[in-house]
Length: 193
Image (cartoon, rainbow, N blue to C red):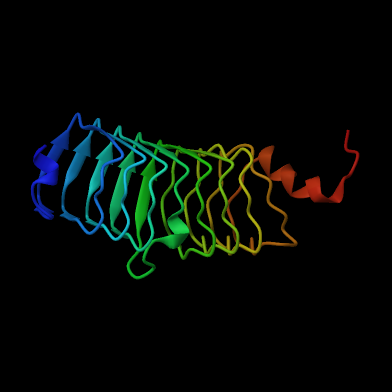
């Protein structure tokens, strides 16, 4: 298989790969594009992705310990069970556009001014994450946890199914829309007609 024949790739395009239990540990990809690929239970530990794009890809249950993820764009991708909190923190940067994320962990990550527009986050964890100025517009955040987060100036307009306790998160100058912003009252257990 072409992708496994060398440890470093630059400016390459990979299409229609269907891989399971493949070891990418230690491999480097710079300015590469992955289109219509599936990476199921593959090992991404210590791999490096810089200025890469994943279009319509399935990335499920991938170990990301010490993985470098810098300026990576995920478009229309499915990301399941990924723990981004164990990636290398230096220069970590992702952009999500219309992706589906399920049970992903972003705890304690610095993701200020990131773009997640139109994505669906199911049961994702943002505990103590810095999301100031980030764009969650048009996102579905069902079951996702926001606790002790910096959400200052974050954009949640037209986002749905979020539960954000303003007493446990920094929300100053955030952008929200009705009626979803009423979820701020949920922790008070009020009976509202």
